[in-house]
Amino acid sequence: MHNFFRTPSIQYFIVALTSVFFLVDPFAALPTFLVIAGDVDYEQRRRLAKKACITCFIVLTSFALLGSLIFRFFGITLPAFEIAGGIILLLMGLEMLQAHRSGTHETPGETEEGMAKEDAGIIPLGIPMLAGPGAISTVMVLMGPSPGWWRTLTIFIAITITSVASFFILSAAHRVRRFLGETGIRILMRLMGLLLTAIAVQFMVNGLADLGVVQTMRQ
Image 1 (cartoon, rainbow, N blue to C red):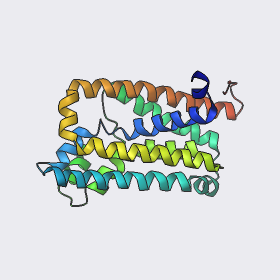
Image 2 (cartoon, rainbow, N blue to C red; image 1 turned 180 degrees about the vertical axis):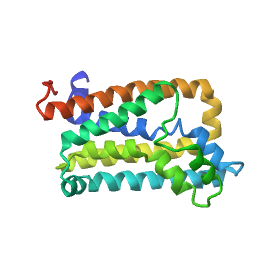
Image 3 (cartoon, rainbow, N blue to C red; image 1 turned 60 degrees about the vertical axis):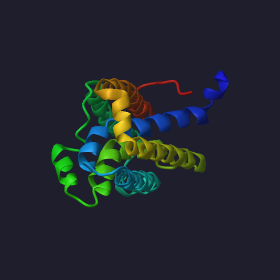
């Protein structure tokens, strides 16, 4: 069992899933979702959550699939994107360690605007609240400029699991928030922030190693 989890494909899947899920961070989105949803009934809240999560899935999948084209079009190398993405994730992780939801997900103005919009499930709930810059840059880094079929499938599965989990969490927003409480959500956010910070540092180390600046041992 120990050797099973040390295989490169399983390790890559775990990194991909945790990275995408922590950056989408549906638990931290609960307060904003409840504000935008207002006093609507369960079915309307469920439809709103469904639209937001479908939008998240489409956006992340699109950038994952188009990532290699973007790399080639702008002449961006993977190490450069790994370092840039790592810096973005590091800043977001540090904010999460303080139990603050990053401004890259949504701003107070976007939340207020979303309350008055009929398509709030798309903007700002789907993007940028769930599919924010951090999640978008991460799926592009994970895919790389020349992804193989197994890497593409792994990222697709990670995005799918994250989107489905986010739907169930947001659909049951009131119950999840009551169960976890404000303290529970903050603790969970800090734990995710800690792991996200470690992933961010690893992205930057990988980028520097690919450039030959530092030496590292890759499993």
